[in-house]
Length: 406
Image (cartoon, rainbow, N blue to C red):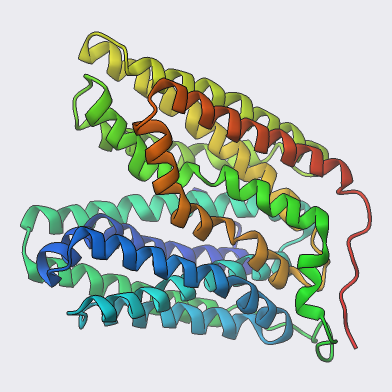
């Protein structure tokens, strides 16, 4: 684990904070569905609707949170959002009715999305421009390690299959975010404010930046790999292939381990917009390969053959994911004005809640319902977004819009 962390300093503290909350997240993610349905008594439909509404609220939270980080002490904003996430997780323990679940889900998703934006702003402030993508890759590797460890802890709760075990997982997640808040508060303070006060229209600057809006929109399309991994691929393995059902979990393990071990290595190649464009082109090409292999697994005649093809597809997919991450992170930093990283990163990060909201319905209909043509359609959509994002990199050398300040 130590070799994944950045060198001692602010970046390492940021990574330690992210490790703490990712351990809690990993345990929460593998147990939350059963807790809400079997312990709280909500229906799967109520849980799905509540989470969709919650991530819709999260979509609205990233930009104001990032803007607050630009204008205030970003450490304090991040610590408050981490603490707010922990309180939301703890509040899930008191949920008994669908309405209360929706309200707490909104608080949880809003704080999570805002925290992600502010962490990016902190990274941009604390790390030299030429090292940002590599450090961001290390953070991603640390997150995957934490998620894997947390998932293992959550597995113990699943094995116990007791209400007390599930509640212990929620408490663990709440405490983990509390630890993250304390670590974030230890980061160095900004020596001076970037601007004295907001000018009229300052918050709209990111919406008026057409190239950044295009980058964000294309990246949101590429972020659809999130429900692809967590929902669509497991359903495909179980319903449309003859591979053993446990392979669905194995594919997620392969993905987590590969990102933990390989993301930093892939990101080291990306240090400027030209490198970002090349990385994104590779992401598009490898996703085409991955989708073709996943589709081919659906017609494989034996469990062993289907399993082998799926594992190859998982390897191609995770390389596409790592190449996408490295290229998109580089551009998200390069195209943002130096004094508005919080605002811009909040906008850029909106692709995650969009993918979580719309992706499950879209990809289930497209792939599970459509079969091989659906896989090919998704591959084409992803590759077009990847190549389009690479084209945006050609304009990265032009001056970014100046911040609107008094």
